[in-house]
Image (cartoon, rainbow, N blue to C red; front, side, top):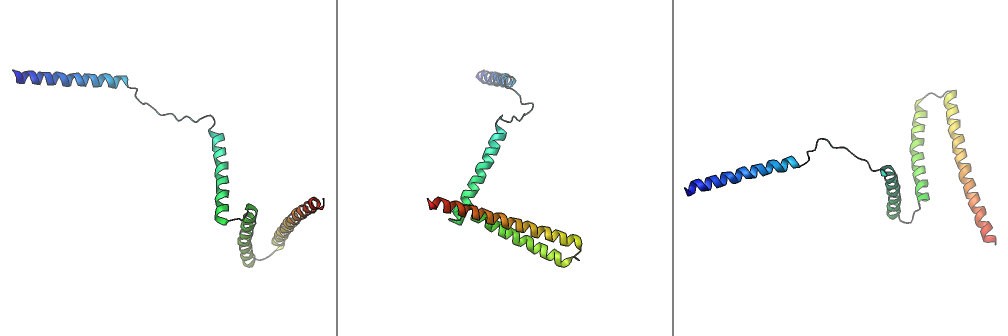
Length: 137
């Protein structure tokens, strides 16, 4: 009899546990779909994060370069970029037959470069004039 009592107790216990599991499962919310919610300030945080990343990049470059300023770095990048572009232009000029339209385009480039030179010289002249004026007092 004790053997039957233990089996009945155990089976009652298992039935009770299964019932309890069903009750708990019915109480839990079931996920039907996931909806992505973007915070209201997401775009502004994204822009601010991008600005900070650019600033960090500048600081890292300064650390790796040493005391070279961003102006020096920009000048070096411009010169390198110009060299690459001039090599491409030179190769293209040697491969094509020049006609009036090509000459016009090359003259347009020369005018552009001359304008760049004038702007840079004007910036230097303005700096020099300001520096001499402040020192003359």
